[in-house]
Length: 69
Image (cartoon, rainbow, N blue to C red; front, side, top):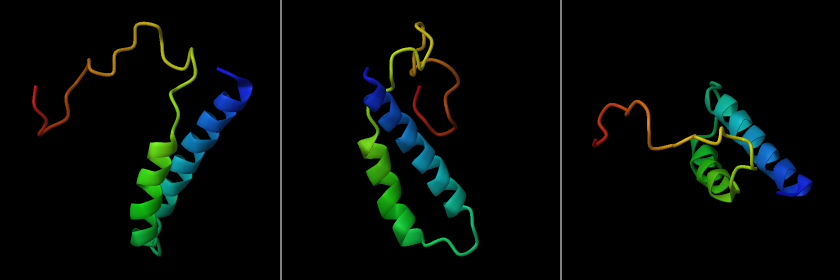
């Protein structure tokens, strides 16, 4: 993955984090959050190589309450 792609990934993750902080503020605009959040998440590229350990499996681990299997 090129340096630019890596920078894009990191920048998008940072913006999602900033949006989460904004969402927790008292005067947050919920309509903006409802539009911007999914848009940012959809624009998130594949993680750069080496971001997760080689044996990482997103389907393993503890299941969230209310999910099947």
